[in-house]
Amino acid sequence: MGIIKSLALLSLATVVAGDFEFNSTTVGGSLYFEVKLRKNSKPYKVQVDSNRPYSIFMHNDCKTTKCSLYWDKADTYDPSATGGIDTKLDFEDISTYDDKKLKGRWFSETLKLNSKKFPIHIGAAMEATETTGWQQAGVIGLGIGSGREDAKIAERLMATLTTPLITVQEGKTHKIKKDSTDEDKESRGSITFGKYNATSCGDFTWVDCSDRGSWTFKTTITIGEKQYEGKVVGFAIGQNTFASRYTIHAFHFAKYLDNESDFPKISFEFGGKTFEMNPKDYVSYSPGYGKHAAEIKNAPSYSNIDFALGSEFLQNYCVAFRADKEFKKLEIGLAVNHGRPAEDKKPDDDGKTPDKKPDDDGKTPDKKPDDDGKTPDKKPEDDGKTPDKKPEDDGKTPDKKPNEDGKTPDKQPNEDGKTHGGEGEKKSAAGYSTSIVVAIAFFALAFQ
Image 1 (cartoon, rainbow, N blue to C red):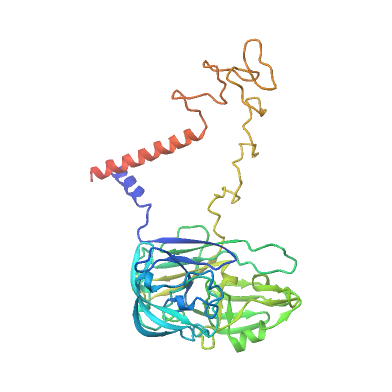
Image 2 (cartoon, helix red, strand yellow):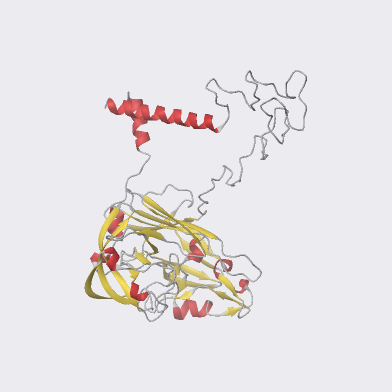
């Protein structure tokens, strides 16, 4: 009875309540996930921001080039559709996070992530001094800095998860290369809220956050031959890497160079390991100038981050944010990013994804061979004749024996008329196994 009860509980424990994952697939786009608001059934695509402790949506009034480079593609926030309540309080993006000076008003909303709902105030941007590079409707701020409590979401969200953990796995970012004619390729990323069971990320290395007010850590950064000690490092998820304006950026990246290899390698220490970013990860070729340029941007004027690791780094490494139940011990994890496989194909055990299932000899024929190993172009007719071949005098087809019904199957049928080795057998076996598990589970539960 104890064994049966354990089997039943095991089968029921395969679904982890409270945790969920978003998969993002784009071509030349930024990592995103989807949320819904108060009354609106339409999902909004939003980017992730690990720095801001509040969320921003581009208001309908911002649907021009004055607010976003992608204003004609992104869905903008419409409070009349969502039921958002205008608080009449002015909103202004803090220059610590950006120099675009986004302004608007605070709206009272309900943020819906999967099955979770959170009352929240969001900043609705109605104007800006410069256009943003956001490709979606806005950003969900998962930062933990100071600010109005009714706008924060990270701690409340993580408290609802079985494990207070958020894991970000970005897809590949494709830079323009001098000798490359390839178009933008598909980029597959994911964001997991809660326990992480996927294989896209390797084993994580963890360090404590440098303070309880941000997802950052301190380390020594090496750029080329120059070292920068005690620098604050954060993340720019789904965006370009950025570096301190007047020290790191001006000295290393604000230039055009003849060759990609003329730019420096970047490395830093993290949890006793060395992580690197090479020129091929962050340098693009500029046809207009005939030179190479670094796609590493200036940090915002008042940023408290010296170096933010963006998509150029995160295409190769996953990042995770972890807290204890009291939200006092905060940690950052890094792991090798193996990439998320395409949804329409499953990798074989060797990691390769074939278009067809190989035979036992490793070859993939287009047709099934006959018993003699040959592949006929056509199946025998009902009258026992085979096109392009003459039947034997006894009415039999060469290399095969007819069944009693006169038909020539490739394999011997079961008593129920199904063919061994086909999909029917696999599905029946799966259904049979599933039935046993379900029966055991219900049997065990009935005797609890």
